[in-house]
Length: 435
Image (cartoon, rainbow, N blue to C red; front, top):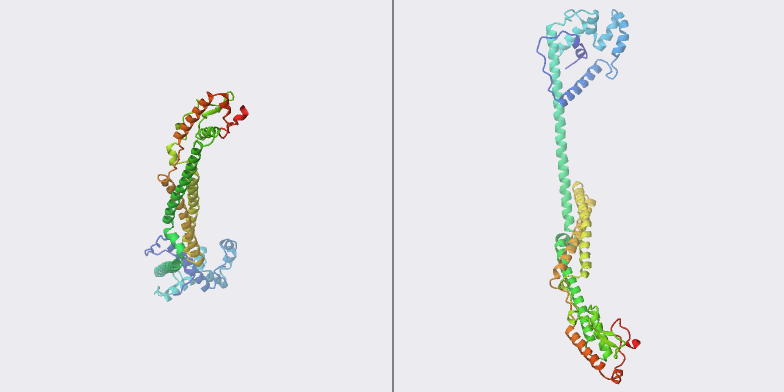
């Protein structure tokens, strides 16, 4: 349907019609924006059809104000009509300055408008150049239809844009679903090719690690308890040999004193006495043998040496837990990366992260299990302390005391028959040095 650039420009100077006004467009920002764009596009088409460059339409208002006098002076010249026809301002400017006929009189611009409306099927009256009610009604109907067309075009463009957006989102979702399905298939294929060792560590590592830890802790406690018990038994046997009653008198005296010293006594049964005829004398301050080698019962379950293995097991569990947390964080990141892009590199990264997380989790459970097994093993694997024969030691002490007292009542010859005493224990001096 043909249009002309005169119509939107002449509207402010034309008489208003009594017909109802077309309702405004819906208050939709998107629709208003699209309508504005359609109007601008149609305006550029109308200007181009009239031979006017849309990017350089002519003089601006300031320029028109400066050249108004010249333009008015040339209004009577026929050639000056080319300017109104080219710009579409003839009717309004002519009527404003009194150069053209008022509304209702003949006007070339109105004739052109009537002809265009008639060609478009909106005007059925005569081409008389008068802006009458029929012409105004035809122009208003034309403007209403054009506004409806613009709104319909804007609605169509918006519906098309919405359809394109929905289509794009659907295609994007389909692509992501296909990519995710391909990645899951690839991950299943790689999971099937995982080595049996890696699979066992991932599936059973924590449980097996804890079980092995309990077994290791129990065996460690049993080994330490047996070692301690054997050493205690050997020490008791060595102490018993000190009070066996074998050897000469000085050796027996030295053995008894050493027995008391190793038993923790502050005083030994026999002490050097240079004034005595035998060179030694009984020490009444020495405690009874029954008070020696006393061991607290708690030592059967726990000793200071237990700090080293238990601390090592718990330390190993703490270190594994720390690195295990880092491995699990890396596993989450690798899984998200594989979901976004199930490429070969991301899937390999995910597999490696799964192995590291499983290994550190297994090691941490092993440390906890070992500490638990070590503590639980204390009830069965006790530290057995073998106590020396304190009764035999006390009897040996009494026998030596009686010998010393008997020899002390004999003659000097019998006293000289006693050989020089040997060292009286670990820290004793030679009795011969005191005589």
